[in-house]
Length: 119
Image 1 (cartoon, rainbow, N blue to C red):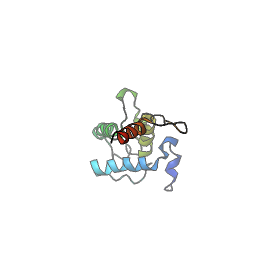
Image 2 (cartoon, rainbow, N blue to C red; image 1 turned 135 degrees about the horizontal axis):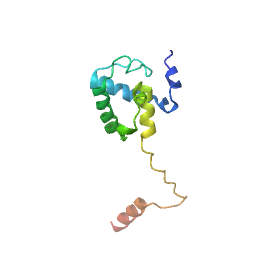
Image 3 (cartoon, one colour; image 1 turned 90 degrees about the vertical axis):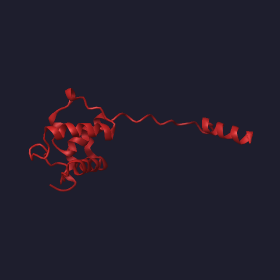
Image 4 (cartoon, rainbow, N blue to C red; image 1 turned 90 degrees about the horizontal axis):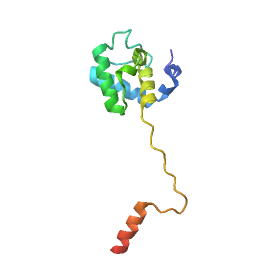
């Protein structure tokens, strides 16, 4: 398996930075070096039930996701790539970008102009 072949795992897990962050969690919290994002964490015994619960709490805290136990599948935690896909699926959507029409003066510009005029 090549270093880039993990990208064939669920497409949501293509975020290399997220995968790196999750691998770092394993390294710093449990001194577990996950050599590949496709390494089966359960079959290898690297992750047990206690580690899974701690991981859930860490993912929720670190990435701002909500992972209700009743909605989770064990398969979502089998590999780092699948964990990354789970985080990506459950992350809150970013707020929509605000596009102002040309020449529009935003509230900060109005405040700055008022304070400059008062001075």
